[in-house]
Length: 247
Ligand code: 13P
Image 1 (tube, rainbow, N blue to C red):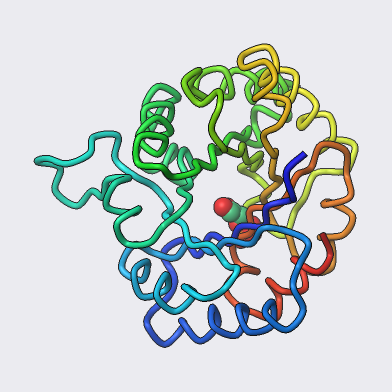
Image 2: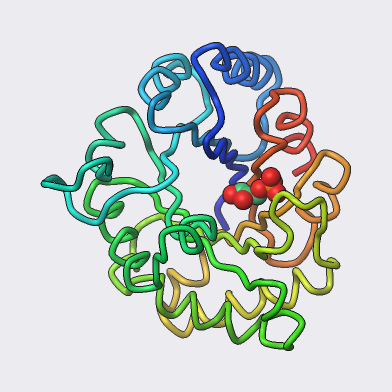
């Protein structure tokens, strides 16, 4: 099993002044290394500067989304190759905020994951049910269907991660019970193994949605939880570090 991956998603937050948080995180991890892989995914505007600031550190830098094409007439978009060129090593694809706000479907997410592969980036492929889907008893089925549609077969031999982020737990302070997290992670694992065999057995499955210093140890200790995708609590080095130390 690979080391856990603790990734911070800054979403549309962060100006140059906030690079100090990334530097503080790197300094703390240099002094006392973590037993995990650590990544920060800043907005695209900060990616190159953050990659430079963290170049000598153990903290990886990632993008939050990429286009599936490598270049072309796609105003406002950023390709996986551009992220890699700016210093990224990973990229989040299929975040629920993009699925909801831009109508991204599983096929587009799979194409983005393949673009990441083409550019040498490790994709973090996000899935997760809405509250209505959970209340209808459909969470496992929805998530398994998203995994089947969003994780391309071509990923087989490369590093990738899946992030389970229940939509209703994002930014709300709500989290599923540990039993509920374990049930979904087990379903994701079964689906990955069916689709990809041994590679599907290796890929870390991250949990995301209101991960905080106070709940990180319990969540990260749950069966088949191979790391965390952290939003709000990744913006401040002290909070993110506390989550990393809990793993
Ligand atoms: P929060 O940790 O702020 O709930 O966000 C989770 C998330 O969406 C990470 O991608």
